[in-house]
Length: 54
Image (cartoon, rainbow, N blue to C red; front, side, top):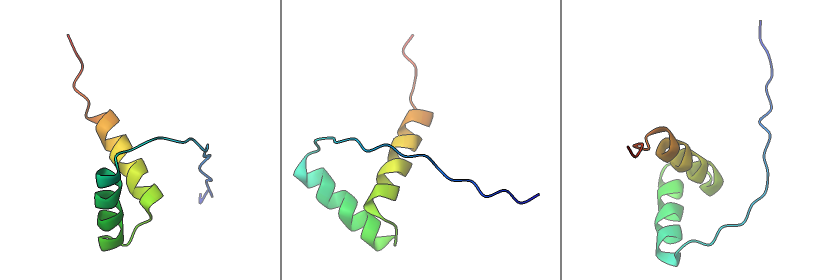
């Protein structure tokens, strides 16, 4: 059965280096996604692929 899902979001503020933000803006624009969507994908990838310390 088709189910409509709505993602819940929260607003947070983070400070990031200007050079990194510029790179992310270009990457988002070149891939036709919002900067917000790109940041979410990058964070999810980083968390999912984080190597655990022993």
